[in-house]
Length: 414
Ligand code: SF4
Picture 1 (cartoon, rainbow, N blue to C red):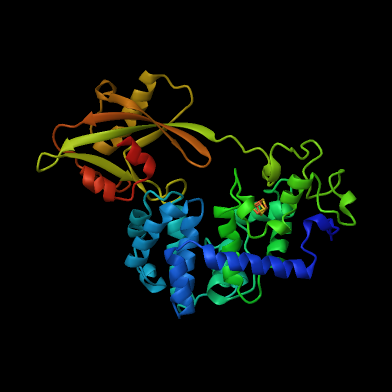
Picture 2 (picture 1 turned 180 degrees about the vertical axis):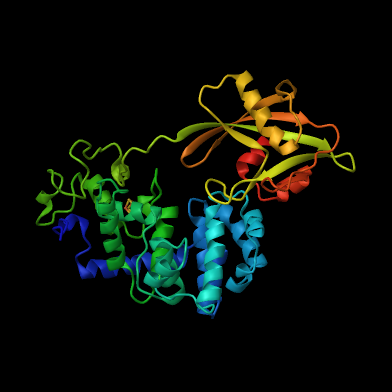
């Protein structure tokens, strides 16, 4: 087993832990934001219904801001107020409601998991973090801990981006906070700290602190309810960590949780020395040609052809204008030719490369891809018979396009 970390990085004093819990919970009771899933979790007597609401909100909140999620969450719960209702929804409906929220596989897996609970678990949610993670697709360690603590009162911790930041600052953890060794230590800390009688509130309080007070760039340390327990703040004020007997074990090399010797404490950064992350990988650069095939609909309004993407991979199952990934460095003339070839399959008739009108370029940043859409349009005379042997395709008006399961990137293209 690895040696325990030096005391600077631990919560080893029971009296301090008690005080920290009390201060944090008192602050949460007074200052917490009113959020619809919190209201439901606090008022709903049925534990499985609470769990469903927490689950939906937590999946939506992954990589998405609270302000954006509220509207999606309300619409979702109105349409599918229970797990059983969601289990009966079609993937198309789920994608339509999810459109614009990003990371579309989240919605798909949520619905798959709801079906699994209904069909294989007799509609009973697993009730511990371990079982939730083991039995439900798309439910990771964090989501499982959140559902189990908030809905079923299990005294188990959670570690998300906000908690990582708060814990790293509270205990001066400056090693790469995305490394498995540090993440494991943070889970140990979260599990040790969580309040035994109010675990759900405690976890939400810790996350809330990270979201509203201990924010990434300019934390409001003066207003922080746990400032007297914060080693980073102490270090900023007094220039050194709290004097604990084995503090000399830290910072002089060898401590797995201290900043690396090559990047020591930077006094101009103060508490924002923590957390630290290894440099991010640059996103992959990609170019895609896309074409808006346009025809006059029966009332004279323009209609556009959209086609469905494959059921796995990026933007799985969503609809888009016919598109084609482009090889790097392809000349404009060649781009038109390959796109015209591609369109021939959809229209069932020859498409002249020269007839494609270049509209412009649209850049969209996915988490790991810097995508440029090279946008063309092509007005069509006469009708086009869509080939049912190809991927699903359909003509839509602009209004129908916006209501369809299309990505934010395609809305930009339109
Ligand atoms: Fe974060 Fe400052 Fe509070 Fe420490 S004192 S936990 S750095 S807000």
